[in-house]
Image (cartoon, rainbow, N blue to C red):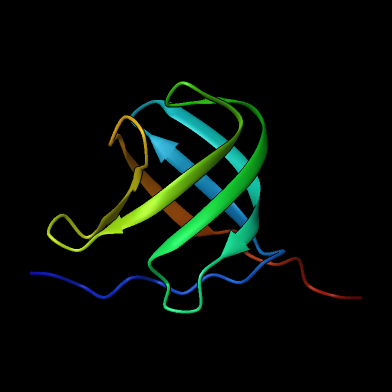
Length: 83
């Protein structure tokens, strides 16, 4: 079943997962329609160094890298409770 693209906002902390690769990052750019985001991080993810641009693939209900079309699971990181 197809699901709509999740909405992310610039500055949100996210977790990227590609198989065994997992990195925490921050949304640097987010389109207003939720179809594309760019995420910055420290490291390498799906062959991308420190930043990965992603497009929503509605047929697969996942984000994919723009160049290699690698599926990347993107989840919002839970925010810490404020004291």
